[in-house]
Amino acid sequence: MSQRMPDPLPWHADNWALLQARRAQDRLPHALLLEGPAGLGKLRFAQRLTAALVCAAPDQAGDACGSCRACRLRASGGHPDILAVTPEEPGKAIRIDEIRDLSERSVLSAEGSGYRVCLLHPADAMTHGAANALLKTLEEPVARTVLLLVSAAPSRLPATIRSRCQRLRFEPPSQGQALAWLAGQAGGAAAQDLLGLAGGAPLQALMLAEQGVGARLLALCSDLAALLGGRADPVTLAAQCQDLPLPTLLDYLMQWLIDLVRLKTAANPPMIFHSGREADLQSLAQRIDLRSMFLFFDNLLSLRRQLGNNLNAQLATERLFIDCGQLGG
Image 1 (cartoon, rainbow, N blue to C red):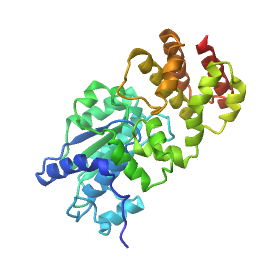
Image 2: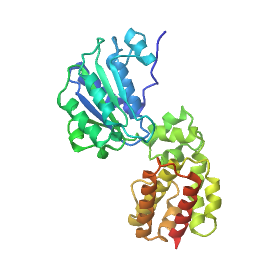
Image 3: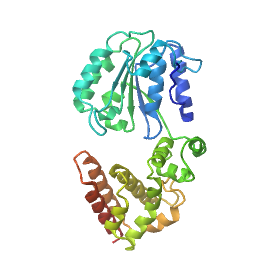
């Protein structure tokens, strides 16, 4: 029975065509760094490429056939030429022993007729020691072995790692292309607003819709204005947001602050997350000094770094809204 990968994402077409041309010329890079904002499907692209590289009979588009022995092994999770390293839990680090094991196995010849593929996601989760351990593998390429590093924060990777990879950049698609794709998914009537909150990243917008948090986030802009105007209570607002995961709330507040800073410092900023709310945010931005905005942003970053430390989410949320309410003076 044929095993199919998820349908290709339309905004991946140019990067896919580039790599297929390189493969046809037998010039695939030894190491690829797939980089770009979250929510663009970089891991999905890497998995699609992995499937194609181990497949014994790729189709005309370069995709895995889905039915050969290699594809069946890959679909079952047991292909010996696919080596994947991810953190044990989201937010945790990739440790040095995991990279050493990957490096030892990557020097072996591919067992099938395709490539051996080593996939690291997110690559920026590697500890300093793990990144140093990967350098030897990057510096001593093995024939028909490809390393795929996926990262939404490539600046967190050491320069020595970045310089030894060919970087493949992923950018948000045009709004028209993104909305057309979302229309066939579960974007709903608020797809355009959610796409704005997602920074133009369609998969991020879809995730917000599927998690059921989109409506709460879209209402939060008005709630924050009421909070700063003394018309809302921070503890009550925190209770209303109890279904929002704390990381999602932190991301939202960072976007909200970025919009305020952009609107305060530029008459017509090229991009804001809250499309259609410029006038309301512009009025709000004029009431808050930049220093207060940056201090609050630093608090958000500090809290984000503590997410793995068993924080009390409700208390942290209440503290956030109390601090936020004080921005308005």
